[in-house]
Image: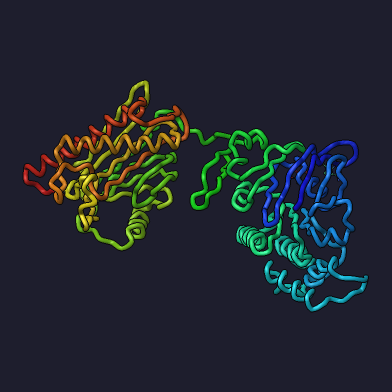
Length: 495
Ligand SMILES: Nc1ncnc2c1ncn2[C@@H]1O[C@H](COP(=O)(O)OP(=O)(O)OP(=O)(O)O)[C@@H](O)[C@H]1O
């Protein structure tokens, strides 16, 4: 429906836009991204006929743009420009009514019933109806932006061009504006071309993204193909990371400061402090560790500097352990957001610390083990009723170094295998199946690494890091099981 063929041009003799080619279909949202001065606004100006390209052609519904009268073009295309200062103090309603101009005939034609209906709907959709009779000058930047969007919508265009539409909007209105646009592309087959600076908004809402740099079209494709780390770092001259959005299938770009003043000292394991009581083991650090865990508090990936293994009674039962544990941490003056918190019914004095340090690396493993809920994973499906009491083997792995996400996953795998081997060697039995157990039903694990120093790509058993973790976890779990068994044999108090 809209096509640009070899479009180039700018202001005077300098070509600001160079050879842009694309086609946008009805109902599509095309996001345009690129650094300041890359020609995004100039490109929009070509599309709404404000500037003439020096080369190439713009075609709308099979007709060259140049063949449209201004009024007919305004029925096709509406624009929400970057900056707009109105010279006159119109009311909000009057501004929105201006959008009906292309649909009216004669200079002084009054608004028809349809005009009024469309204007009211546009004001409703953009949330400005309540200011209808206020002068536009009396509104905030974000409110003005929404009035101008209402005016563009009142035009009932086929194509809506937006230049940084979310500029003055708070996050709620950014989302609501883009949600509304998406909705209109579905329900009215509206085509949207939007210049967006926020790469994540562009990724979430655009069907395709056009990346511009120095007037050139660098890429045009689905967000997940265009938003590549190396390309973006080069174009924007910035450090960034590409992740995946946690809840929608779209890339997530996060920025990194170029000043690395938060770098940590070497020998980080030596800076950990240990506080052990019967009730809890707390490891603290002055520095934040990047953690991956299945803990009650701080599960998933996060940044933490307090690590708490809390002893609870064997019949601990709570509907909302996160809330209960949060209150517990508050009581001992620890911030939940800074803490990884696990629970165990095992006696903490049976816990085991193993540190392996050599020229290849430095890791510390801490383990506690209660095995009353021991499970043979290959037969767990046979137990209709699974036990969720706090039996639990808790394993913490601290690594002095920087891990890739793949390495975090591999370290978890290596450590799980090492734990299972320790249980097999100690002939721990699943009480339901009477077969050898591979873990317990509520085991938890933490992998904590720093964000400086030695970089580990891998953590599997083929890697030096994996070998070290395999041994340290095996030894730590074995040692804690032996302490537990010893007391059990001595008929002391045990879990
Ligand atoms: N009216 C103008 N006269 C002369 N040069 C202009 C004019 N408007 C823009 N330019 C120049 O054209 C180039 C591209 O500007 P444009 O506004 O299209 O970039 P942009 O990608 O939209 O930038 P931004 O992200 O900062 O809005 C810049 O070098 C700018 O200085």
